[in-house]
Amino acid sequence: MEKPVVSVIMPAYNCEKFIAKAIESVLVQNVSLELIILNDCATDGTERVIQQYLSDQRIRYVKNDRNMGVARTRNEGVRMAIGEYVAFLDSDDWWEREKLSKQLALIKKETKVLCSTGRELVDINGKLTGREIPVKETISYSMMLKQNWINCSSVLLKRKVAEEFPMEHEDSHEDYITWLKILQKYQYACAINEPLLKYRLSSQGKSGSKLKSAKMTFKVYRYMGFSWWKSIGCFICYAWNGVRKYIRK
Image (cartoon, rainbow, N blue to C red; front, top):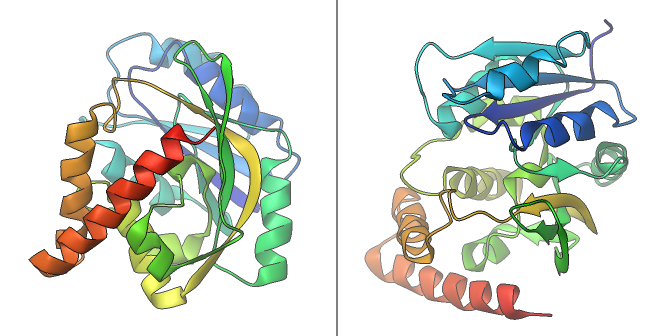
């Protein structure tokens, strides 16, 4: 197989009901890619589902020796990647067919290191809700302090930058910390304001509990080295924007 342009990194843990749709949405992308699936010691039928797709030479499959958590698993995927870009996709989400090709065109045109997209929310059964979360077409560091505009499953990122800023602090929103650090250095990200990501709502994920998610968000600012007062100010803005985002029709 020729060297891929994009390495797609998919952590997998107890997702047998959802992962087939995620995998298939990657394999229909019209760009040169590899799909790195990392089984984080799932205890259900996840591996059995994955095995059905391993005849596709674009797929690389590994199983962790022990449960490492999503942040370290993504980092291991980045370490394995050989594409110029990496893209992250959680195993319960999926993409529209032209998601990667549209992002590649934009990220090259804008000469940015990171590109995001909008998303549409789907329920636990995969039914489209019609509720879309838009994204600004240019995202700055200051914007990100008030609201996380970048969903991890929407990201296309230069591999070298992903290596430079591995995900850390899984007791908080590790991806949010990573985007903040990247934009501290590179200033701006670009985005496509189209729902090219279908994002599944679930009460089982890290953000399922709003109180737990709020505590993790506050930790983000502390891990960034902010003072208590600055952390509180950022958190208030984040909470207000979060309420507006999810009640907006």
